[in-house]
Length: 176
Image: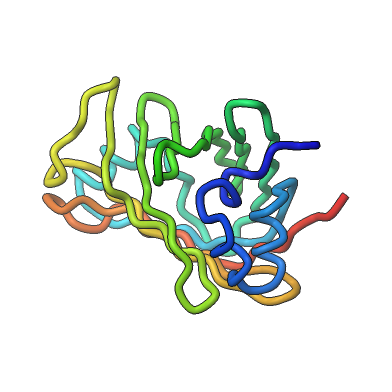
């Protein structure tokens, strides 16, 4: 028997209250595709964070693909948004979702509100050093859907320099 998904391990029975296909995808993530619009905010600090975090390039209705592979330590998420590609590793640490991306380690509280998955970042580490919140990239996201797919709205900001990047759009799962 396969181990439960990261989201099932983290949310347990709360995952059952997530709407539609997002609940099924979160329970057994595989692949998904859709389109996202990526907006970068102007400013030197925003450009620095976009570069160091390897955030997706700006554009409207960018073809998006997600592929998730499970392993004994968690899940590996491969994403392509337009011509941008990036990989993150997810696992449960205590009652938080750990997301590793390059030199960064993000810890998120994940909750279910009105059928939507909501992510609220609580800590970030760079090269193993915890960054002070005022100088940290902060990721907040919400995903809510229906039987066909879900709307994703993700915002990266920094308390010290303001908004950095936003991506939003529609994603639909692929069932094998």
